[in-house]
Length: 430
Ligand code: UD1
Image (tube, rainbow, N blue to C red; front, side):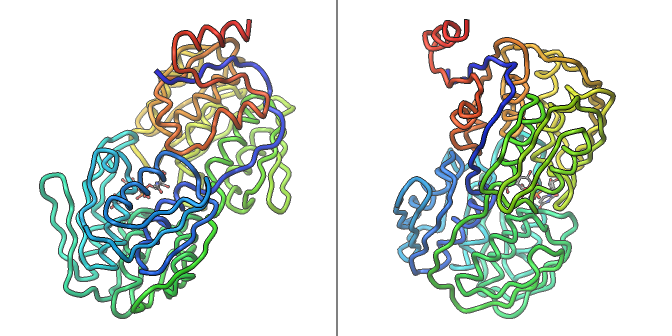
């Protein structure tokens, strides 16, 4: 029964070191098997999703050597199986990155279709459209998706929706296709750019990543590289909103402030002070916070992965705020839990109308998914009294040492595994 036990009400104060970006690490790890030479990846976050992906890579014959907690050497020269399956792989969306990586290198891949629908239905039609445009045939049968081609040939692909996953998957397949590929209406997220930089460091020829037109000139093969993953925009943003909600003062270190602009802008709008340095951002919340409106959008808009964290903070800000979720249709499942903590929120379709309250109070709550789970931890840290947060396996998918980093900022939070440990926590805080 792993859960977080939290005693809230203390402002979080201090410095926190941000790790490598999970959403960049996943495609970069998958893409590193596209060369037969050895690739060294650094600044890799040690979280559940990256570990599942690495196990899946080892499962098809990739040589995976952990150098230390955040560095790994990968060699894909002895891959002997083009079928990626298994229960744990099925649980992570990013398993579909094996399609682009293996299709690009071996012209064939079969991957178990991701299950679960935690934040909304997540179609893959744009990935399939892209693979087909490159000359692959795609079949779905018995819960598996297979893409294969005699040869991949560059093409002009217009994405009907801005999709991070489809942009990444098509980019991976296209780097080893013959000729030129253009992806229009491409996603511009920092992790798309990071993957392009990584592939280019292996000898790929990708231009325009970070804009909505990406041009790829196919190359015959990719070679070895050493590469450090960018800092995690969402982990940083989560701690920035933790500072706001707990009325604290947190410096997030090892970040790229440019990637945090939409997050910083909203914090300033609601009354926080945000100070940027070269690779750090400090958020001070010493004044009363007030309402704002926010709509999630593809980068450089406000990230959908930060929507629960801002909503938790607006729930404690004076006035009425409106949060509109425009990317995923099922991303307000945490609201019922927040209402149990005293929030005043009404959800209508893809909009949450939030009337700020003076305080939350502790409760026993469940993490419904990764980011909402982290947001509920922030709610518990800002609440009066004790809370427990269950289903923390979701949070551990994407946050490394979350409770330890929070403890260092002065939070009273423990990960407890039994009733006895929970009682010990209660004694400690009484
Ligand atoms: C990635 C991130 C996730 C983030 C999301 C949006 C990873 C591992 N996950 O997810 O944390 O919340 O970007 O920034 O990086 N869509 C289609 N057809 C497709 C693909 C997507 O209709 O073929 C739709 C989706 O249903 C969704 C929207 O496009 O409404 C955006 O999805 P997408 O950008 O693909 O998200 P993911 O790559 O799955």
